[in-house]
Length: 407
Image 1 (cartoon, helix red, strand yellow):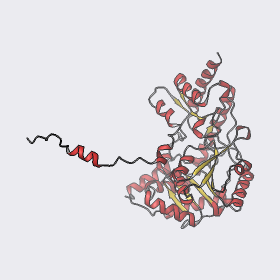
Image 2: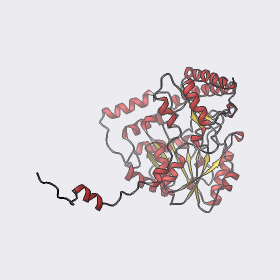
Image 3: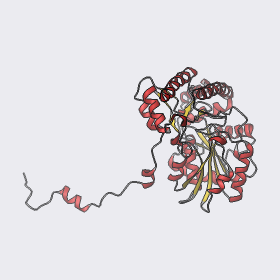
C-alpha cells in the first residue's frame, strides 16, 4: 500500500483547488415564482375528504368518438412524427372551424401551427415577437402563466389592473397609462381565467384600434371561446385592423375536455408563424400524432358534446354564484369559462388566509386571488368544472366556514 507523503495533496484536493467555482443557474428561471395555485393543491392532495373547486380541468371524459378515433389511429400504427406545423388534415380543419364560427380566414399551409397545448403556443408567441427589454401589457387578474412566459422570453410584463366593479373588463385608458416607448404587445385572455369576464365586441374594437395606433402586437388566448353563456365570443383576429398583428391561441383542452391530450394551435400572419414554427421545430418538433388525430375528430363531430357540456356548466354557474352570494360572499355572474371569483373581504381575511383556513378547517380547496396577479387580492377562484353534488357540498362547507368567522 502506497502511503501519501507528508505535505502531498490528494488528487481530489488538487482538483478542487484548480477548478473554478461552479457558475450560477439561470437568473430568469430562478426569480420566477412558483404557481400560487399549486401550493394549495399539493397540500389538498395529501388530505382526505377534500372537495376541490380548484383546478381548471373539465370533469367530463373526452367524448367517445374522439377517444375512438385515437384508438383506431394507434391500431393502424400511426405513431410517427408529423410535419413541424402539424398534420395538414388537422390544420385544414382548424382553418374551416375558425371560418365557420368567426368568419376569420387563415391559410392552413402558412398561417396555422399545431402546438403542444396553448401553453406552448403562448411560449412560442412570446419568443417569436419579443426582444430583451420589450414590454408586454397584461390585464390582471390573469392566468398564472402569462407573466412568466413573457419574462422567460426576455420581455418585461406590465400589469394593467381590471376591477370587479367594471366586471373585470379591460379599459383602453388603463392601457394607455401604462404604455411606453418599449411597449411591444398586449397579451389578453377572454373569456377570462380566473374572473369569467367576456370582453364585448366594442371593447375589443377599442383595443385593436389602440394597438394599431401604436404598432403593437396582440396575443389573444381564446381557449375558453366555446364556453360563453351570455352574448357571443368575438375572435380578435376577425376585427378590422387585427389580422396582421394578432396571434390567435386556442386548443382542445377546455371545450372538448381534452386537457391530457396536449393539443393546441396558433394562427397568425405567415411571417409570425414562420418564426414560431422555427422555434417549435427545435424545442418540441411536433405535437403528438395521436392527439392530433383525436383533434380532427373533435372538430368534425364534437359540436353536440360541446353543447351538452356548456349546458351543464351553465347550470353549475348559476348554482355556485347564487349560493356564494347567499352565504355573504359577493360574486358577479361570470359570462364565460368555468370560474366564479367571489369577493371575500367581508370575512376580514386575506385571499391566502381564506384559502388556507377553508382548506384546513372545512376541507374545501379554492385558489387565492393573489395567484392571478394585480386585483386578485380580496377574491378567491372557485372552479365549477365539477359535478353539482360536489359543488353543493363545497358550498355547504364554505357557508359553515363563513358563519364561524362571524361568531
